[in-house]
Every structure is written in structure tokens, then in C-alpha cells.
Image (cartoon, rainbow over all chains, first blue to last red; front, side, top):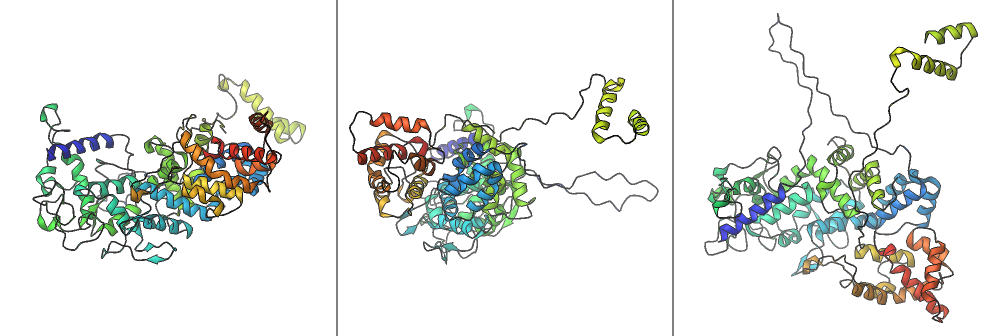
Length: 403
Length: 187
């Protein structure tokens, strides 16, 4: 029965993840000329691969008028700075119209309300906040607010090797993990609220919140671990015909070949979010499927040494632990694009992230990151996102005030 | 172009505008341009990056509502005037994830009642600065981010017509109506 339930869960994930995953594109670079061509033959022409160009910000042919600009910022201000427009801003919009958008938005990114908005963005993404059982569920939100307030790269929420206390001061994170990094994921708030069998929820929340992905995702982005390296439950990738008897049949490997790599990063965190050196990743023989001993979760890995090790692979890169994995994620194009989608969803209430035009997201992310050469602040992401004409048009169309 | 050159030689300098007009005239009359429209092609229409349903109305998160109100009052979110709202925050849709309370952005009649009741002290405090409805022209821009209209005044007048309200009661009624409106509380 447990196996049936697990494969039913996999079926649901398989169906959910087949909806609208974005295509991962790697930049191409001019190839070097070959030295091996014989001297008497003319060399083959090199492929004319264009160096990538930072996309220009798309602006409206006619700047927004005063009324439209005001309507636009009235929609955004409660979410980006948690207040209404000030008399000064209203006056400026009356005079300058759309030309005032950039200076006003820039000013917003330096306000305390912006840091609070960052707090709520992350807290809602991770469903954390408050306190319980001696665990501070505000740590992830504190780090997000700190990162936004000090205009640190937004990726700091994933790469920070510190946490922030209620007074805004740096402190050690509360999991006791010996590695550095991990940001908001290296908090008991995240780990305990997402504790679950095989560490599936910790892995899937990480991917959904910061890469806008589910399982299965593109294999070129997240190569599957070899099936033979997984416990038999997850090796199967048989035909999903109705006669198989369980949910999606036996196509567990399709998802779990990728799940395995990410879930392994959490193998040493118990259900309360504390890091345990002695974690083995072995199934508790008397426990529910997916649970190990002492409040820990079962590993996907077959080999005992691999099962108890935090060493894994993230987006094709070998990593020693969660801290290295989040650094890989933070430097990836999916992260940059996902943060654009999350910002738009947060500010507009859009429910389906994949309903946002892929080209818009890609271009905004490439602009904000300068073709992945720069780690933008949340403020920079906000400016590039909300100064884009396609975003302005969408929001104004939605309030019945098309530009 | 040949005609342009000839004309400039015969007539002296040709102004740029004259030159463009001549060029356009010669181009449009030439066999090569037959059937073609002069001038640049139209830029493609701008596509929105996503679609928001026009009927979608979202209650603002509790923290945003509180901060909006604090801005109208000219106080911080921790001011005692807002304490009744903070005390009722979970009834008003605030979250406490640690204890299993998710944000609830539904705007029910019960929730409106809680909001209106908790708003009383704040509206009382506003009467000195913004005695409503006479101060509507100054209050609406602050609260709603737009200019007051005749419709705003008419609506408030209609709501209190024939009730024999005192000035204080009129202010309270107007204040509660404006600060409990969907325009103030939703996007």
C-alpha cells in the first residue's frame, strides 16, 4: 500500500510537472579554429555564432501619461513598498507622467517598506513566519529583508553563510550544519516546515521557489542519477499502462532520478531541522516508508556510503553539501528567470507562473544579470521587471487602463 | 535622385524637405515602386507579457493594509491607534505559518465587520486633520491616490441623507466608508 501511495504521489508530480516547464538555453560561443586541417585544403568556414547581446529594455513608443503612470504605481506600491503613493509621488506623476516611473521605483528600492516586501515575498514562498517549539520561523524573512535593505545580491538569500536575528544583526543559523552557505534553506524554519518522507518536499519546495521547476524537469538541466544507484523502489521506469495496478504504474525513475540528487542534500537534517552527523539515510525497518531512524529521512541511494553522504549533484555540477548546491542554483539562469516570475506573481497575484511570456522573463533576467555576469540586487530585478513595457501593458490592461 | 540633382543644379540649393518631397514623388511614380507603400513599415503591436483577468480583485496582505492605514494616519504601523487592528490580525487574514495559519485574502462580511469595528479609533483620530466629508478633496488623494470626484461626495451624501447625523457621526461614517472600500483595501 505504501508503495502504491508513493507511486501515486509520483504520478501526480509527473502530471503537474508536465505543465509548462520553461526551456533551459545555454549561451553559445564562437568556436576556436581547428589546427588539424591539411595545408593544401582551404579550411572549412567557422560557424558564424553570434556572441550573445544584452537585450535592450523594451519601452513604450509613447511614454505613459500621468493617469496611466499613477494607475500603474498604485497597483504596485502596496506590494513593493507596502504603502500607498505619497503626495510627492502623486505630484511628480502629474507633471512627468511615465518619465517619473524609474526615479520613483528606484527610490522605492531604498525604503524600509521594500525590505519588508522582500521579507513577505520569501516568507510566502517558503510558507514560514512566526515562532513555534523554540524555532524562529522569521529567520528566512529576516535574511530576505536584510539582503534587500543592504542592496546585496538577491542570490544572498541562497548563498549566505549567516542568518539574521530580529534586531537585524548577523547570527549563526540554527541548524548546526557544519558547512557554510545555504541561506534561507539552512534554517530550521524551512527544514522543519518542509520535513517529509524521502526529503521530497524539501527538494521540491527548493526547486519550485527558486528555479520555478518541478519534477521531472529538463534532463539537460538536471541529469538523472544512474538508476542502478537508487534503491529498487525508484529504479523502475516501466510502461505506464493502466494494467500496472499503481498510480502512474512504475515510472518512478522519471521523477526520482532527479529527486534523488536534490533530496540527498537534506539527508542529515532531522525532522526538526537540526543537522545530525550520525544520519545514515537507511530506511527504519519498523517505520513508515521514507523515514529513517531518529527523525531523519530515508535516502534514495542504494549504496550505504552514498546514502549517508551529503555529496550529490545539482544541475549537473558535483556538490559536497547543500551550501554548494544553493550556490550552483544561485548562479544559474533558471534562478534569475524564476525570481522575475516570482516578483511578477507577488506584485500582480498571477497564479500560474508559466502564464508569463517566456521571452519576457528571459530578456529581463539576461538584462538584470548582464548575461549572467552580474548577480543583481532585488532592486535591480524590480527595476528591470517593472520598467519593461510588456509588464506595464499587462498590468494596465488588467486594471482597464491600457497604455 | 537624378531629378533632385538636376533641380539642385538648375535652381540652386534644394532644401532637404524639397528634396525628400521630390524623391518621394519620383519614387512613387517609378515602375519599380508600383504597388508598394511609401515610408517605413509599421512597428508590430506591443504584446503584454501576461494576462491579468480584469475581474480579479485581490485583498491586500494584512501588512500592506496596516501600512496603508498608517500612512493615512501619519503614524507608524506600531502606533496604539492601530492596536485594535493588530490584535484582530488573524481574523483579518494575516498569517502565522509556524502555527498553521495561512494568509486568507478573502473579504467576507464577517471580516468587513471586524475591520470596521477596529477602525473606529483611527477614524476618530483623523477628524481633526480631515473632518469628513468637507475635507474630501484633501483626504481622497492621501487615502486612494487620486483626486476626489463629485461622485465621491455624492455617494457619501447619499449614505447619510435623512439620518440626522451629527458632524462627528458624519465624519465617522464617511471615514469608515472610504477606508473600508475595495478601492482602499484591494488591487
